[in-house]
Every structure is written in structure tokens, then in C-alpha cells.
Image 1 (tube, one colour):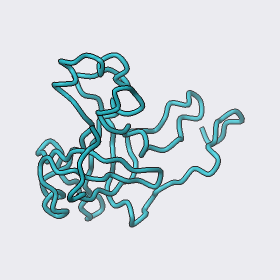
Image 2: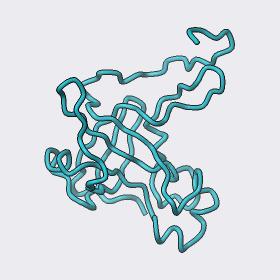
Image 3: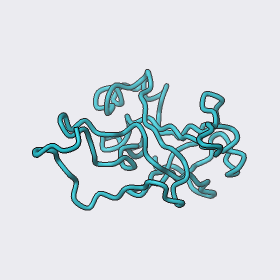
Amino acid sequence: QRSNPVAFKAIGEVLAVADERFPFIGTTYRVTEHWQTGLMTRRCSWLVEAEPQVFAELDSELAKERGIGNGDVVRVSSARGNLLAKAIVTNRFQPMNANGKTVHMIGLPWHFGWLVPKRGGDSANLLTAAVGDPNSAIPESKAFMVNIEKMPDQDLPE
């Protein structure tokens, strides 16, 4: 639908389309150990032990390119915000080819942030756009542009 008279439009929304500062695709996803925002599951010690904090999952080629190793603290940023996370270098993510250009994707679980205890890290939704479907207002949190950098001498908050 091209237009909707009752569609919500975020005033001043910043879009990072083809912005050189954010050359990678970010996506959010769930983990088995937590449900939704983690409101209930992050209060269960055995689940927190299994999945204690936010992480950024990236492919080995991008990790090598950026000098990032498994367990390093990284800053993932978008035009909307940034967060610190622990890097997980994985083969689950692979570089893609789009119009002859290599494109990397970074995955973040969205179960963390805005909850006591805060020790799990910030919410991946700090990076996503405040735009959604014009009819249902379901947010577009599955594809957004990000950057990632290693943060030497930086620890994640307890």
C-alpha cells in the first residue's frame, strides 16, 4: 500500500541506507534460553547461566578483516545508537554476494536491556529503526545497517 492516512510516521527518523559509516547488515533474532524481552527468563539463574549476555555474531572473514576474535568486546553501532557486546565468530553466518559486492551480516539477540538485573547488556533494539508496517505498526527489526569495531581494554558492564 503506497499510502495510509492513519500510518504512524516517526518524525526525524534517521535512515542509514547506503551510508558508508554503516557498511554491514544487522539483524535481530531469538535464542532458545530466553523469551521475548527476557522479562521472566532473565530472572531464572539457570537460563542466565546458559545465555548470560548480549552478543554479536559475525562471520570469520569479517572478524579477520576487523581484527576481532571470539570473546572480544565490540561496539555495534547504527545511525540510531550503539551497544557493547561480546563477539562470537561463527560459521553460521557467511558473507553474501550482492551485485558483485561482498556483504557481511551481524546478528544480535534482542532479549537483553531495560531490565533489572541489567548485567546482560543493552537491547539490540537500540540499533533498529522506529518504522513499521503502516497497518499493524509491527517494527522493522530484521534488517538495518550497522558497523562493528573491536573495543580493546573495554569490559562489558557487570
